[in-house]
Image 1 (tube, one colour):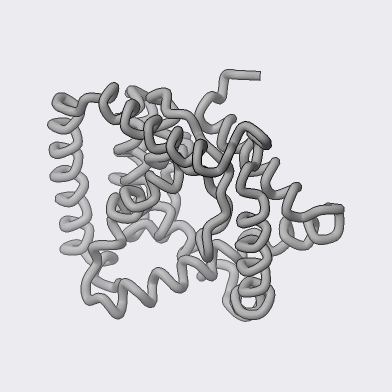
Image 2 (image 1 turned 30 degrees about the vertical axis):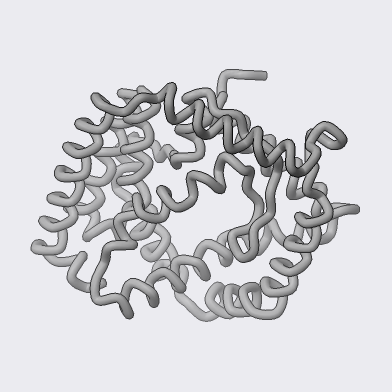
Length: 257
């Protein structure tokens, strides 16, 4: 990880950004959005038929989803939450902020790519400028100077891109470890993984250790929200499902009521 904080590391990160942007620009000129949309819709339709979606269009897989939700919640309560709580209590706040900023900067690369795929020119330029400024003047992303400079953060993923292209979300789905998603977003998950620049970092043991720290940092950031849900929600599963679906709809179509 230390390599990414040096001038050579920043050069490599910048080169990765330029190369990937070039590839993505080429892909944008050749990709057939209608074919991708048609194939994704066909997959979603096949799953819908198998699950008899017509009987419960909002959550046809509720039995399976609740089982996965209970499994994930048990793992979280037994392992992830205690570790995140210890991290939150022991780690200095400036270190937590630096870790969050670092991985947020890495994520901005993929967000900028997806903004480009969605035809959001302004957000694409904004994302590229954020990565450039934070990677150089922000000590490899440890400092988020871009936000202070007025370059707001926009998180985009390939599931949102498919949604902007017109692919329906399909049934709500809860996956082991991953958690709440939809069929459309689950299809996009492998691309989101390989689109994350951190997944290419070597050596592998540092990459894996960084990924674990990233997960703990994300969980620590929502400790208060988790406690609020546990105290306020009569049915935590329903609360999280409805909140997730509403948030995803707003992310894809922010101008809709």
